[in-house]
Image 1 (cartoon, helix red, strand yellow):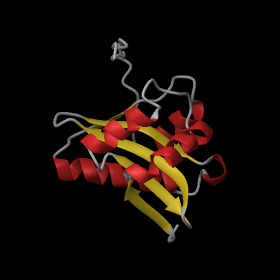
Image 2: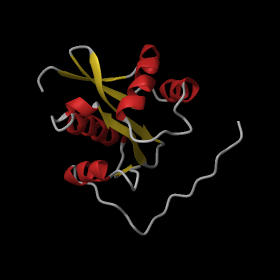
Image 3: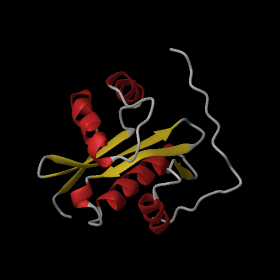
Amino acid sequence: MTDLRIRAATPDDLDTVLAFWTRAAEGTSISDDRDGVERLVTRDPEALILAELDGELVGTVIAGFDGWRCHLYRLAVHPERRRRGIGSALLTAAEDRFVRLGGRRGDAMVLVRNETAQHAWRAAGYAPEEKWRRWVKPLAG
C-alpha cells in the first residue's frame, strides 16, 4: 500500500467522515454528528486519523488519549478495501501516537455482534477483557 496516505483529520473532512461511517462503520454512536466530531477534532486535532488512497477516504480510527488511558474507536475500512492492510496501517499510526504521548495500553470498543471486527482486533494483537463491562449513561445536553 505505498500510495496509502495516513493523516489527521481537519475540520474540512468532517462531513466526508460522517458519510463514510454510514457505509463503513458498524453501528452508530450518540456522537455521530457534526457537532460531536467537530468537538473531538477541536479538542484533540490528532485524534481522528484518516487513511486515503488516491484522494479517497478508505479508513478511519479515533485514537483518543485522555492523559491516563488510550482509547480506540471507529476503526473502519471501506468494505471494498478491506484485507489490504489499511486497518493495520491505521492501528500502527494510532499506537505510535499513543507511545509518543506516553500511553501504556490501548483499548478498543468493539461491538459484541461484530465478529469480523473481533477477528481483525485479535490479528492486531488485542484481546477481550471479559472481567470488565462497559457502563454507560447518556448525558443531557
